[in-house]
Image (spheres, rainbow, N blue to C red):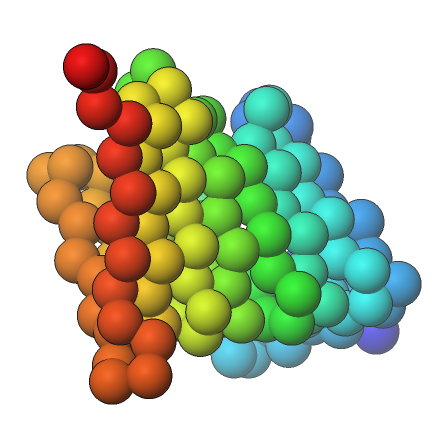
Length: 155
């Protein structure tokens, strides 16, 4: 219990400035492994960004000043999210969504859906990879569920 409390306090301190709020039915942590697991009706809010899932695993790393920072978020089960980034608004869904904040990369796996609301572009695929730093995206489909790209065009 002592370790879990220490992890929660460090976790809260790291995100206090960015107002990261995680609500869930259950929480457990392992300081040795540097992970926190939230289960049951998970709702994450950070400024305007939102993520909902059945389970969220947060993997932490320690920097040179011995501060813990998140290196990977893995959300599974009924995942949907809204992300505001570089004057864009992304809505997404998938069976599993992975966010790597140190690289600003998103991975959507299983029944992936990603919509960029301002430009009106929509992607469907079994695997969607988005790199916010480079602005690149890659989508993978299969024989039964090919990649689908929908774009608004001006007449």
